[in-house]
Image 1 (cartoon, rainbow, N blue to C red):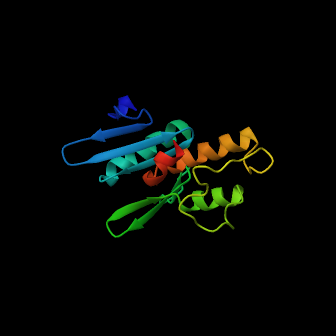
Image 2 (tube, rainbow, N blue to C red; image 1 turned 135 degrees about the vertical axis):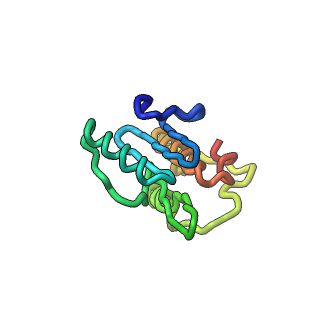
Image 3 (spheres, rainbow, N blue to C red; image 1 turned 90 degrees about the vertical axis):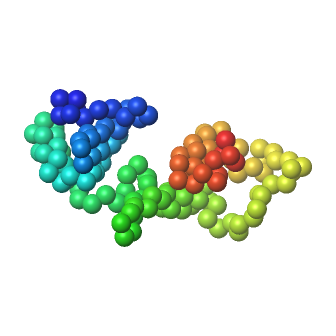
Length: 146
């Protein structure tokens, strides 16, 4: 990427950027998924051609999902959401049929392994990990998850 004029982001090693006077091209890379965007179609095409020559990439068209995040184009902007991820999570842990409450358990509530639906440590770890990932687009739940 450096030979093509791209630099690593200082905040995220999976993000590369190439900035010129009035244009920018961004490339996000995660394992075998790549997202390319920017305001210079010529640079984007050149990058795709170069990557295809070296790695035989497959163009999937307009971005709609990336890492369980849905990207919706609205007017002149993009909306990032994990709605489908959240719905799938509630179904996986059988919380899709429960009614909403401000707090599921009171401060003095006690649970036991026979009554707790998350008694299995691996299920609990899976749920917490997914809730932690969900907090990427839903910061209001970040404190409760942590």
